[in-house]
Amino acid sequence: PRWAFEPWISKDISDTADTYAFVDGFAERGIPVGVVVLDSPWETNYNSLVASPQRYPNFTKLVSDLRAREVRTVLWLTPFINSRSYDFEPGGDAYFEASPNFDEANTCGFFVNGGQQYTWWKGRGGSLDFSNPAAVAWYHWQLDKLLVDQGVSGFKLDFGENYVRTDTVQTFAGEVSHQAYSESYYRDFYRHGVAARGPEEFVTMVRPYDKSYEF
Image (cartoon, rainbow, N blue to C red; front, side):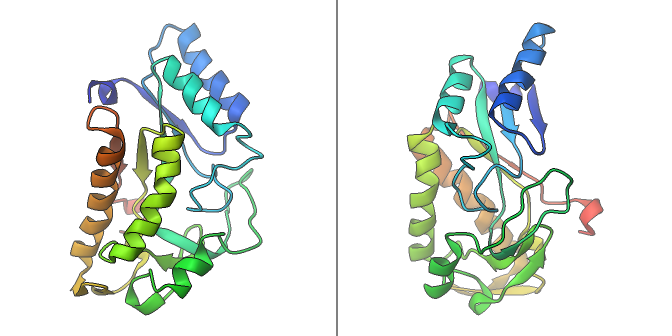
């Protein structure tokens, strides 16, 4: 979509007032903004898919207000759902329990490699199996609250699947290459977002390679 080529702005560790001020600061300087990326931490836990009521007490209104100014909202996500979370960034949030959607995903077998958990830079958890129809339907139901109910226009998919440290990945569809699993992750988010929002109202941004994380 054309708006995806307008300037994007992003910062870690934000909140509602800070987001409005961020956009206003560009407008006051005559700099157009097309997209605001809400990076982590924006949720009740990493990849819980629910906006933090402390940081964003009226998340739907924030997204709507920005959209009225022709500014879309894009959210940070990875494929992991955590049993344990942490954040080493100063000013980040502390989560003392598992993500609220972890137990159901784990009990239902929605993670790859038989539910094996892996440590990544925001904690420890399982990586969603995007070849499992039940897992995908369950996950899409949660995504639709963001996409359909709240009007989010895209996701920053911040890799993460590389922390599944196996050359091949055991999935609902059988054993696949790590590359195939990675592509299923990016493909599913894109296809579902376009189906939910339409091709002119949705984008994904991906980081498939980052030397700073040794990948």
